[in-house]
Image (cartoon, rainbow, N blue to C red; front, side, top):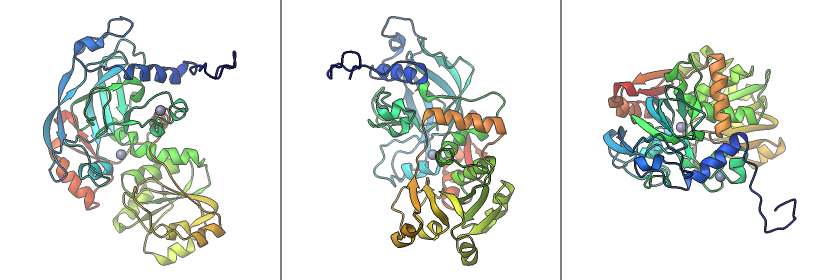
Length: 400
Ligand SMILES: [Zn+2]
Ligand SMILES: [Zn+2]
């Protein structure tokens, strides 16, 4: 409602300032199809665009939930006024890529091209883009668009957009029709707001997983205000978990890792954890009862939650970021007595994603990765299912 005239029918748009203003502008343009070839690079106000037409990209995708990942060709839209075109250099393999390819969370659209831990070199920008120049390095995480107008978007929580964010892959694509294709490909075109800046001098392959695994674990540490001296637990030492350990250690926390893999205990300590406890070590679980300020659960499958809830201090929180199924075992009697909290968190907004990239760049934090070629993706999936990975596969797209 307009505060000046008090007319309830007179709606005043939020002030178009700074980052949110850019977002609002991007969302307005997003409603205009930007995909119809070179002509689309013309801006609505008549300004000349970059005149980069739609392109064909090489990609690696699956034709069905039982198909292996193989090479396919996909279309990338023309570069619109607010778009950035990236030549993809590296793309991390997130465990959710496997869940999506195999339709574990409901039927996925096929063909599916996964990948949402993307690092690329800017090869073209639209006429209205000021955030990037050709030659810059940009990163793309789990989403490539949102409405830009709802209360969540206006408060830097695009991932919680009330009108639904557009996921980087397998999401209905309002701009080009069909479904979005992810980073297992040689190039992509993304609205500039959803591309984060990658500072110079960083290890680009090691930074790729920060775009999903990094923000997913950084956001809860920020929200629950992890500080020096707190006791923080991390359940699962995989792609997400190892980033959680590195980030919590950087915050100065006293970190304990809970793993099912005896072979990962030494890795946890190398990353700065004080100790690594096996889930079935009943004696240690008893010793650690009621001692944690925060526990981040970073295991990709459902797990019995109560043994870990019992480790929380009064009023402390277990935040689940990995499993997206029902978590069994919650015992209200035991949690209510100590007012323990069970919560969840999923990725983070674009501003916070930029923050974690900058945080990691400033401290030399990267993921521990194994670099592979695109023709090794199926093997990587199989090894991830067998927990045979330390700690993130990253695809080298220059080997495409
Ligand atoms: Zn992910
Ligand atoms: Zn929104």
